[in-house]
Amino acid sequence: MVELRSYLAGQWNSGSGDDITLFNPADASSYATVRRAGGLAHALAYARSTAGPTLRELTFAQRGACLEAMAKTIHGEREALIAIAIANGGNTRGDAKFDIDGATAVLATYAEIARDLGDTKWLVEDEPHALFHGAKLRAQHIRLPRHGVAIHINAFNFPAWGMIGKAAVSLLAGMPVLTKPGTSSAALAHRIVELLVEQQVLPAGALQLLMGPAGDLLEHTCPQDVVAFTGSAATGRRIRTHDRVIEAGVRVNVEADSLNAVVIGPDVARGSELFDALVRDCTVEITQKAGQKCTAIRRIIAPLTLIEDLREVLVERLEDMAAKTGDPADQANRMGPLATAQQLADAREGVRQLATRAKRMYGDLERTDFRGEATQRGYFLEPLLFQASPEAAADPSAPFHNTEVFGPVATLLPYDGSAEQAAQLVAAGGGSLVSTVYSDDRAFVLHTICNAGPHLGRLVVAQEKMARASLPPGGVFAVANHGGPGRAGGGEELGGRHGLALYTQRLALQTAGSQLARLVGG
Image (tube, rainbow, N blue to C red):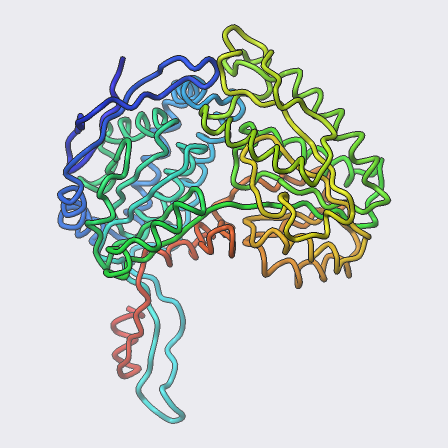
């Protein structure tokens, strides 16, 4: 069986210790192995001393050219990468393309930003400001690349997009990257890094790959390093409270759990294009990647007057998806398995918790007969839809406001149709990455923005006029902020130029106005 090696300090590292097996989640067959890598202190020092100075000497335009080369390399192997995502990630072909094409899209976006920034090496944030009235002395803020390593600890669900999205921003900012993919689905990330190394599209040490456990990685962090983590809230807390991270004042960005919501305004009616759009979006966001998306819809907040119609149509759509769930190698199947046996066990336990306060409207938790040979050994879960009572929906302690089931599971939450209660239900999730409001009622939408918005990282507004052209809210675009407060981790990534802030240091330059013009303006 093939071993997927780490790439550290310019060399492929076989690691040591017992093999850790990666599986095909459709039939639980062995796919590859990884082993624990050593020499992490050396790998970080190598990046700081070798790649850091090289990247900082490049202009934004030159760094952007590296991103363009990365995108070209990944796209050139697209079909082979899709096959890996199907075999090791349990992705359908559509889900695999969503991940891989998302990676190349974020590279293209940041390459375009690089062209706009041009032949400069730092960011100018504002205009010079007089220190006080009548003074010739001025202050101006710029952002400079940090002199450390961007340590990226990624989740299993997006081994391409998650890894490349973080790396694109870091590299454009001028920081080298050490990336650690989620182990269970790491074959795709490994092959992408392998391709980039083969094509030599980046300076030496600019992108390193750590397979398997993180080991003592955080023990060797320095004050100029950045740790960007995507995963569970519990692991995020351990990173934030790590002794060395605290001691060194390492900058940490966390994207964690998220109970994303849909809010349906009281003006939405069955038969309208907006109703059709929300049903389409809910179906996609419940089932895409088998519900294993940080941006997936978990709570559907619907007015009492519409909830029966919505439930009827959603059950019909989910029933159709359940009938087409099975081995993702068969392109006739629309949904594949969860990533691991543990993910399946966790999802089933989460479903049992939801069932204590909500009634199951569709889905069989114990179903094992999915399409394809040997799928009874795989990690499948068909779509499940729950519905709470109005009283339970209003209870912030209820499990659907506190437990993220990372699978194809959502709960209908009835509300009284008021903007006030809708915002309260969104806020009960404790902080989310994204939510969506479907309404043409301007007052309702404005109230939702003002009162639900502070609990979110992104709010999508869908209206009748643009219903046919609207996109499902779970897509993450490089120009928009990705992150959210509270339960969602309190982090911020992407957001176009804003994303560069994580990997740069704001510096206030204070001197004579003429000198500032020569230093910054020139």
